[in-house]
Length: 599
Image (cartoon, rainbow, N blue to C red; front, side, top):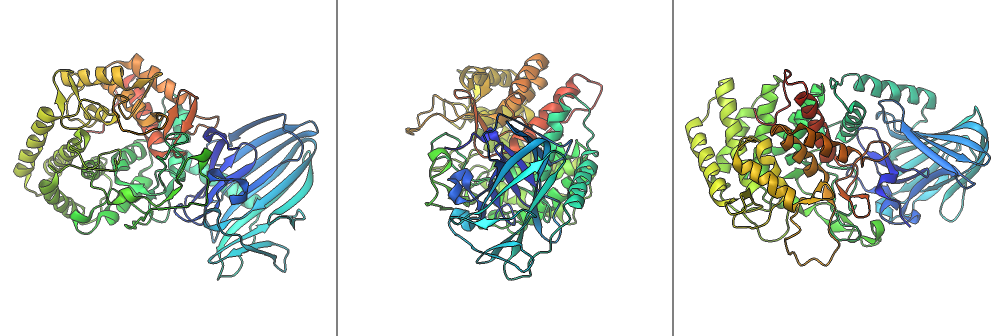
């Protein structure tokens, strides 16, 4: 049996993250970083592939959970016939080592508890050597990895599992601390749990207080921003698309990808929501990561990189894992990093332009890098590529890809003219106009009055919703209104937007994938630009209503079974939620400046 994705909550230390099940089990953790091998992999297998359970021994009658204020401190309250306990889970901001702290607090009565710690390094494949040190801590060592468990509770080994039974009374708190360290170094020193809790609460309180958003749905917007902060790898400033791999886009299917990397495509969206929410430090760090990652020959620019800017993200399959709900294969790494996806050039140049507009300091040499990238783009924009959805197979002339090329030249022109930067502006204008004509002539179906997925295609895709948001055409242009109408006819399912046209025949004998939540929010933003505020608000509310009980969203939503699908939590979904919330709030206050993607 496996849990629904909605059953999980996120904790993290801004270098890695763990997923905590509502039953008290940590089922996913890559240590010491987002892209490390997992040591708790029950999410993609069974408990024997690694998990950490702390739960009442007796059946649970009721449960509820929440985050403590605007923080990443998770509190799960569990009730049995004997009483009530609260499990407090958090990861302190990274110090000398990385720690997971779990505190069992007695709220009422006396509750018998059980603890099962199953460490399995290498994505569940490697059983460690477990021993006690002279201070009584439990060490698990395997190759380069080591974990250390500190707790006052007596533990023992049983069937390759560290277990414990204990009781907690009302007013009593019992701590457990699991710490990661390289096995060749000294055992990390234990931390003070009370101080760690206080420091973690202060860290998140200070960070959350910087938020400048004052509109509706502030709790969900704040939770989305906290989630995005948790997905930023603090040492480099790169933001991962999600902390997981191989959670299926199709339940039971094979569209299972590793999202523990940084996509250039998210660049502009990420910068905008951070800057417009008051988080300029994170925006600067993301900009600097972008510049470092793409440094070098423009011809070698990739669509995604590792958290430190690594380029080689070789894809392989963990064939010993049964997959989430049987969805195979379980993939580690992502072969799409080698694809040509032309839209990312636009996202990158737009990101640098938005940074200038926001008056954030740019690294020396940024403009020179942009000019070199644009010179390369001038020679490749007309090629087929693999598109925003990273199709595997022959390339096509995707409409959104060409629009991304238009964005690149359009924003470069705006930067040059607005900030007195030198460049071949007249040539860029010629290229911008040529690409615009090309898209309008070859990517528009006049019979259906809609832009299509790719040149010559008769199907749509959710990415064409970005055309008015990127400023390619105004929202009241008949071709845009016709495109929105076509999306409503063909890509809507139960009030949500699909990214792929269901009329497309792919030959896949698999259940249809869920609606793409970012696309649904893009449609809400398009409605805002069209002045259809009521429709935008209705769609926005429909999306936020499917967030789980602690405000987290995955990549997709299967309305047939009412379940979230895809990697979780998904940065792009939360980015789109924040952007839509900003623009919806500003649409009701027209005197205020809107959060525009196009400047």
